[in-house]
Image 1 (cartoon, helix red, strand yellow):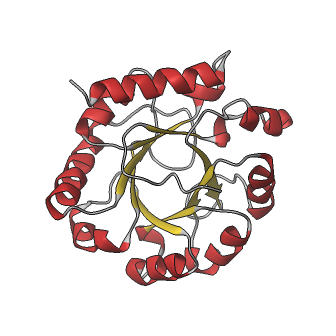
Image 2 (cartoon, rainbow, N blue to C red; image 1 turned 30 degrees about the vertical axis):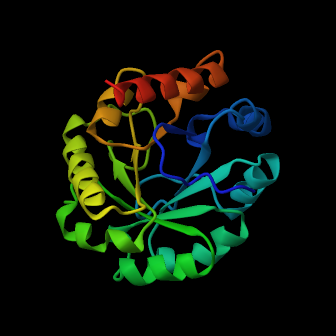
Amino acid sequence: MSDPLIKRRALIAPSILAADFSSLGDQVRSVDNADWIHVDIMDGHFVPNLSFGPDVTATVDKITEQYLDVHLMIENPEHWVDTYIAAGADCIIFHVEATDDHVALAKKIREKGVRAGFSLKPATPIEPYLADLEHFDLALVMSVEPGFGGQSFMPDQLDKVRALRQAIDERNLDCLIEIDGGISEHTIEKSAEAGCDAFVAGSAVFKKTDPAAAVNHLRALATGATQH
C-alpha cells in the first residue's frame, strides 16, 4: 500500500478499541476516509487491561488498505515487533518505559522497512528523549493514562507536544507528532495548535451515528486550527 506517513497536518487515526467488536469489519470499513487505523495492543501487565493480539491486527490488515498504526502498550516490546510486522503493521509504536534501549529497538523496526514510533505515559518527561528524535518517524504523546478508552483529556500533556514541535522544527526532522487520549471535537483544535500532526480518536468516531462524517469533521477542525 502507499505510505501516507508524510509531513502534512491533520492525520486522523480512528482507534478500533472504541469500535463495536461484534461487527469489527463493518466498523473499519465505515472509516475508509480516515488516514490511519490505530490498533492498541495491551498485555494486562504494562497497562491494566487486555485488548488485541496479532490475529486481530492481521484481520484488520486484510479488511483495509489503510495504514496500520500499531501501539504496543506491552512489556518487552522487542520480543513482539517481528510478530506485529508480520501481522501487517506499517508503524510500530512502543513505550520508552518498557524497553532498556529505545534507540536500538527503533533501528530494528526501521531495518524491517516499518516506521518506528515511541510513546510516553503522562508522568514520563519528554526532555530525555528529544535528542533521539532522529531515530524515530513518530512521537506519540499520551493525553490520558494508557489502558482504557473514554478517559478525559489531560491538557498539561500539550506541553510535551510543544517541546516536540520546537525540537522537530529547529532540526528540520521528518518526525510526526501524534496524540492519543480524549481527542474529540472539543480537544482536537488545541492539540493541533500545540503542534500535533496526527490524532487518535476512538469514541469521537466510532460512537457517532456516522463515523465517516466524524472523521471529516475532526480533520476539518484540526486543519482549521493550524491555519489561523
